[in-house]
Image (cartoon, rainbow, N blue to C red; front, side, top):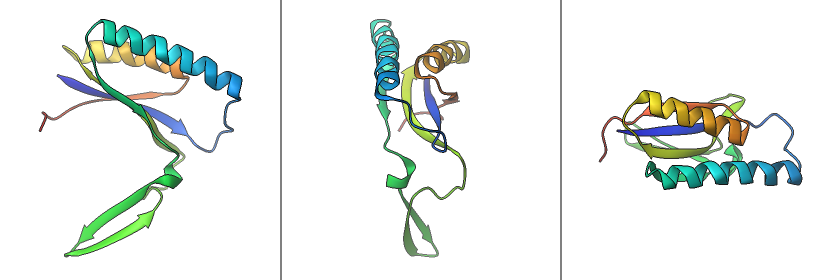
Length: 115
């Protein structure tokens, strides 16, 4: 089964220093390497800040596009992993390691099949 591990980023907090970011990148890189070595890695990526987003909406045949996130919230999706795992317990264990590595909460969601 495939799981999405989403990094919950609070954009209202101050940005980490370059030194803090480099340390976080090193920790995340080590977790990524272990995921790959264990054969659970499918795909991962970081995202630009939410103000770079465009929301596309179609209602009654009319398309509208707005800048930034539609939801008014402090937390945004800052990055993610897609992993192929046997069960939720494995996903939660990787989420714990990932949260520790990146210093942010991780939301775990199973995929509803694959297209």
